[in-house]
Image: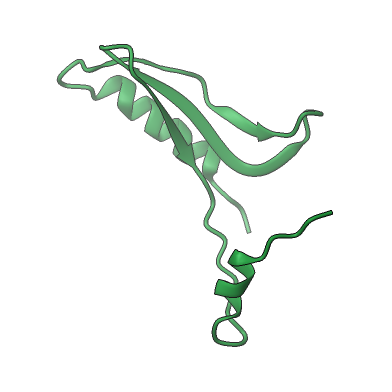
Length: 86
């Protein structure tokens, strides 16, 4: 199934830049991809930084929510707590 993280991040960034009626946003940076050290795509997650007029910076993240159907009650919660060490 398609994920629209790019499109949603673009809409959010554009809205912040174009609809800041109180002029509190100084800048909205470019949308960044979630890449590993080698440049390969880790996920569809997108980030961009917003700076307010006081110089305080914020990170806006658009992340696909992946919900797996729960086959046995409590399994999804247990999997979220699981740490795999390699």
